[in-house]
Image (cartoon, rainbow, N blue to C red; front, top):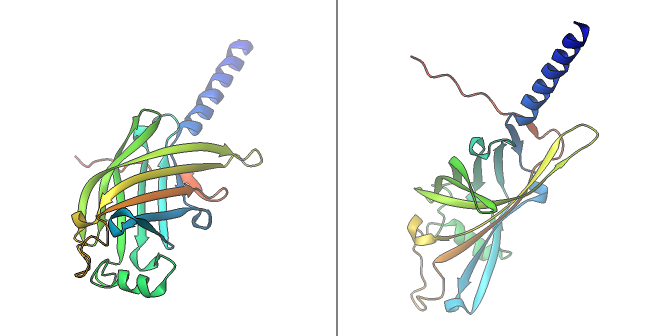
Length: 210
């Protein structure tokens, strides 16, 4: 009888441990070691101007056991655009481009995450310059590092996609050189989560009322 009780206790402990491990966790991004960048072709593709946004938050809900239960929510402050030239950045903030006083945030919120090949795709709503569109955000989970001291996990995520700026009402062109600024903008995200104190169990869904 004692042997059966011991086996039962071990089974319960293992089940509890598996449940904890499989539970979705919410991660916050380590912005000091992450990058939200973009590249714009100019002069008909003769060169490329690169830039980034320096003020952003990203929340990732990651489920080890079932990626379909994972999600991502990002908020980028449009005024934090940085191409390395302040005069150009000031122009990008005005109504010719991002119109940051009227549309201060660029956001993405996923509705579902699916596996595709060796990577994943987050389907969701991307909003920029006041225009919201459904997009597919492909991304790669570079790995999960576990801290042996406290068991906390760090995720690394990379994403690349191309968006047409005119789809979001950013239609500026130079009158003297209409092809000076390209339409297709390459987005590159390199994200790493906070290694400590930046993860917590994801909140349980609120039950629907009858």
